[in-house]
Length: 479
Image (cartoon, rainbow, N blue to C red; front, side, top):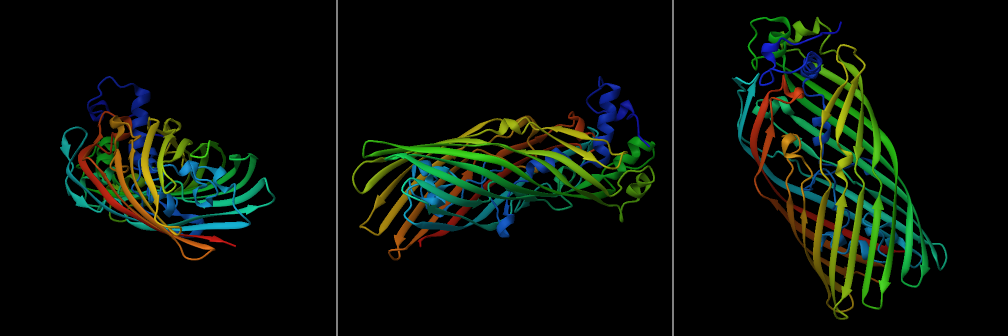
């Protein structure tokens, strides 16, 4: 059975909407939270391939804290670091120049202090959403490992393998929160493996690249205004916002992309590098599970074929990026570091979810994210032959479109203040320690009831505060 339209009186704030649009609204509302918004927000991460869990203070849902050494300078100049396998995330040419076999392993942790307040919501434009208007611990904490290894094959050719958690995020709200119809839990699990080949084409000049195999797993939960849907579709006396059902969506996929980069030297004091990492398209396969055990309205609507557990598929794209970095030797002991990174979030323009249950028709939710830049500057100073200190600051733009800002992805433009320390433990081992404080201005959230996908979720506004500590420990080992 397919429901054809929603009564005009329930198209709040949109009297001129077409019949086709009404039908789209009903279908989106009928499954409420299973939509692009959830997956998009999904961001704070887990390195699935290594089994670690990660929580990230990051702009969008990309994780830039991929090595302890680079974190110490807020990633400034990481793209220009030669013979540093741990920086292969920033530039695959970093594997070139090692002697024999060298490896790098980092453990990164994030501890976030996040909260929301001043939350308000309305169903059908007039009925206030009851619930908690403020809460703590919106973004979770976590720890994840990253690493790389590089092999010198001969004087000019090098090979390497890099394992990272490039994307990830998780957010959560209580089931009693006013935000519940826009999501109660969202998590993205991400891990990537890159096989790399690097060539030293001339002294001080190198190129490298290779394929990138990426895994993504998404888990989304949310409340559904079952009473509001019953009232709209069956014209009963059910009161919107008084009877909630819940949904859990899980899906995953493997995808393939690539990464390339080069490094060069201008004289004895300036080194620079640049890299490009492709976007990766995923087709997520999974399932949607509905809980209507405590919802009388949900059980009534299940008789129409709604809220049936079903398989799903969804297109999901992680963005590519372009990175630039430079290191300038001011004195034999002091180096100036700088970098710029563009993340190409425009590829994340929408998310479509297809349901095997034919009553729950395919959905498209617009994201319209923007390409963003992050810039970092730092200093690196040697204290004797075995110790190095780093300082850095980074600014990251928020890619989220303010017109679609969701509690599922409480984005903000963020500032990083970082410090790090490295010390040789032996001729083979080097230890890296780093920490960064990340903060942002209070950011408004805004979901308009005029958006078709919000017909049954209602409007939502509120403010979110985000800050946190990111710390890392790493060790490089020469075999």
